[in-house]
Amino acid sequence: MSRQLPKPQFVPLSSYREYPPEEMVRRAAEFYTDLRRRRTVRHFSSRPVPREVIEYCLLAAGTAPNGANRQPWTFVVVSDPAIKREIRIAAEAEEREFYERRAPQEWLEALAPLGTDANKPFLEIAPYLIAIFARSYDVLPDGRKLKNYYAQESVGIATGMLITALHHAGLVSLTHTPSPMRFLNRILGRPENERPFLLLVVGYPADDAEVPVITKKGLDEIAVFLEGD
Ligand code: IYR
Image (tube, rainbow, N blue to C red; front, top):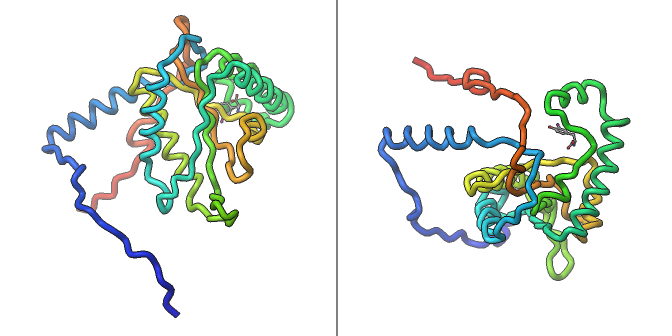
C-alpha cells in the first residue's frame, strides 16, 4: 500500500561561496587561530551585555543542521536576578551532592586540574544564563505527540555553534552541567517534553579572570587520515 507523502520543494543553492584553495587555507587557519583563543571562563563580570548580541548568537545557533529540520531546541535566556538566584540555589544543592557524595573518586581526579567545586557564584554574577532544552517530541495544537529525531545530537551541534558565535562576538561562556538538571523545568516553567541539555553562562570575563592551565590535543592525536597511495 503506498501512502501519500508531501512532495519536496527545491530552490537553487544560491548562498554557497567557493574560495580559491590558498584563500581557503588562509581562512581555515585564521578561523582556527581565533577559535583557539576561546577559553571556558568561570570568573564573570556583572557588566551588562547588549541583548541584541545574544539574539543574533541564538539566531546563528538556530541555523544548525538537525534531524528532519524539526529544530528541536528551546533556548531560555535568563537575566532576571530572582530567577538566576533560584537557579544558583538549586544547582549548588545538586552540585554539593555531586562533589560530596555521588562523584566517583576517578571523576573527582579528572576534575581536579580544573579547580571546580560546588560553589557557583557565576550563576548570579553573569548577566545571562541560557538554559538549553532538547525537545524529544513536539506537541501539536490538537495534543498529538510528534517524535523528533536525533534531538540530542541536533542540540549538541546548535550549542557548539552558539558557543562559537558568542566567542566571535567577543563574549565568554561556561558550559555548566549541574546534574540532574530537571530543576530547570520547574524554575523556568518548561513542559515535560523539553529535557535540559546544558546551562550556558554568558558575559564578559571578570577583570581578574583566571583560567586553568590546560593543553589541547594535536592533530595527530585527534584525527586519522586514510589516504591510500
Ligand atoms: N557538573 C559539575 C562537575 C563538572 C563535570 C565536568 I565532566 C566538568 O568538565 C566540569 C565540572 C560542575 O559543573 O561543577
